[in-house]
Length: 476
Image 1 (cartoon, rainbow, N blue to C red):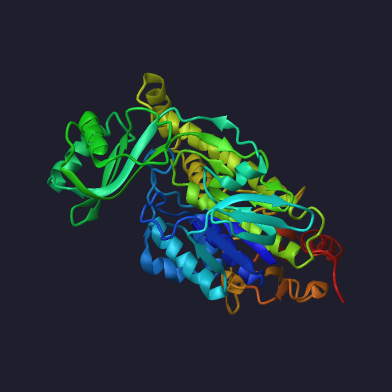
Image 2: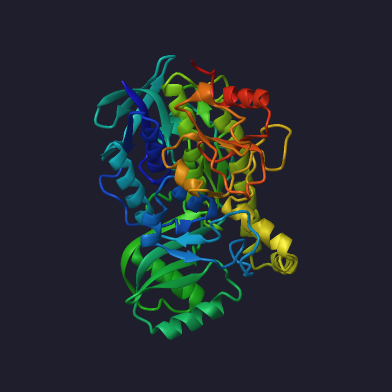
């Protein structure tokens, strides 16, 4: 009996495997592809994802392979300065290709003991009160206590579970490729600037040595997006939109995507869960898809581990849907709005000009950026201070930093009372931290393993209630 089967070995599935292994859960990742894909739709980590990597001791690996950025323009390509007052100690995004993200996450998952089986396609599944049975395309059958579908927008797991996926179909398609351009770089830059005056879904970003990441509107909506365009189709559309194909040749990969917005009605069905694109699809505006998925995994991992170990309090597994479904819905809404802003009709142009003017106000610019970067997420934990339900930024301790204390994936009780608070009955699940720096402005705070503030105050009675709510009854 495997503890958890994760279907899908992309960033979401690998992040989940890491979280589960940190908690000592046996996890097997089933990936349909025999080899990693070179295709890179996700282009980087947003602020909240950067924080997550720091909390798990992975940030240095990503910094060595990526590039920090502090440029605006992430909402509807409206270019404004980077906001100066975001609620984070990691005030930057990180440009890193999706294959690199998968490689780094996969390497750490393997170090922790996760088992990734490639070339394993799930064909069917069924569950009972004790576990989930999985049938692979080659006839192999596996059994696990829980299963999580992280297998993309055309999720087999979601379909087999019978979960509805309501929303809107694609209205427009876009072609995306990484290929070489024979045209002079200065000419490419000049043509791109000219075309983008009226077509914001067009671009060509140099990668060095004649290689470019090129995006161009498609001529229609494909019935089947599983197969990407041919090189000739790509060149033909470049000529139609830009008047030239730039001498495009030698593609590393070509793909097409739409602007459909759909969300699973339920993220949990019994012992099975959905995360990442299996739970929600939306246009890639703002680069939110990869980040939304790994943040799903970050929310689910510690909860699922508690259930495996038999110490999950009532309602903990259901809190995954309760917390993450509204976040996904808000991302779908903001990507719909951004797609409207990218239009060339008079109404869209007027709306874009109005929003651009509003974003000249620092508060509006910060709000829009925090919305895209996940900084504005607040879970509903009931009445309480503004910080309740939000992630806590990295704060100073007398010996190091807060996030350095979170590498092992346990919860933290931050105690600035001089030792008046206690989490003794939850030893092994909650670490007690008392060496806070003087600038910590709360007497006590309880942080879940995903970094969200679950309690604030100095009353032991209400602290015990919060500890029991999130981590189960105290033990001797």
